[in-house]
Length: 367
Ligand SMILES: *Cc1c(COP(=O)(O)O)cnc(C)c1O
Image (cartoon, rainbow, N blue to C red; front, side):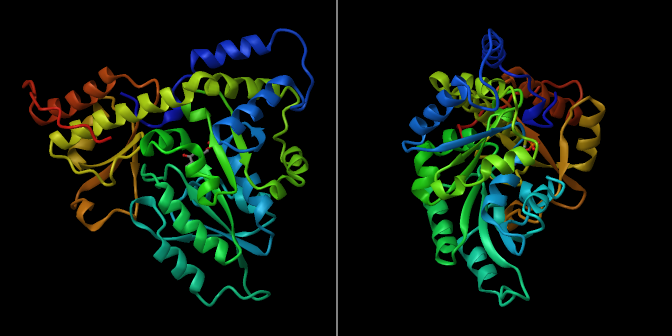
């Protein structure tokens, strides 16, 4: 019963096989190999446009390098106040941009809204040289709250950004889950909606360590090769990073894996709701945030259930918890089984009514 993160999952078999295949014989170094070229071509096909891809091995590097291509040291990147780039990257975006400012805007359910973005940009503290100037908008897809942006929502935000001269980055650590959830074309969720650079995550979706910086705006390519090398993310045996991504993109495996993860999260969410537990955010991808009474939380921990306790200012009023309740963050991956979800739910039943067997209706699917 380990629902702490999607990165506790193993690497997918196909990824390990691809690594073994890439290990047969020599290949040109530093990303000048055939696998890298094939991955770039596959990404261009998936996004229905010519893209440039720079592969790295962590999402933090993908985000920080992308933002550094967009934001000068005296600039600001705007994102959701609770975004990964704001809190969970140990200052890497600030470090890679040589000290730009990360500025958070509020928004319910982890999503920025046109109103919150416009309000922040309309503030009077953006006049250089006294103040930093906003230079980029960064959106997380899926968000830290496990919600997703629809193409129209992305376009509305990027239009505001573009009007103010901001570049647009998307943190797609869980982009696959968002594609599956929205059923939108990858192109509609990115460049067609105004996104100029995407950190396309693979690690949480079956890779061992592989992420792609996908550039839709050709001018953002300039000096990224140098910046990535300087940042220590240019693998000399780059084929091994590329091979992981190729394995996941082939035959839509990345979508199949994300579908499984999302389906497991939906099963879990339905089971929790059937047990009258309140979700803190709508469940739209592979993450479930649920309010647990503190006593239930302690009892589940004692039974060996593993998950993180979350805190957020982003829950909607009707989804706020009560006193003595904590938010449990439960994440499903491609490797999570229905059996594991069922044992987590049974553990709740066992705590609440020891010795009794629960019979609950499964409810209707969420998506
Ligand atoms: C996991 C994650 C990342 C990448 O994290 P790394 O540990 O650096 O690979 C980036 N953004 C979000 C939203 C994430 O969940």
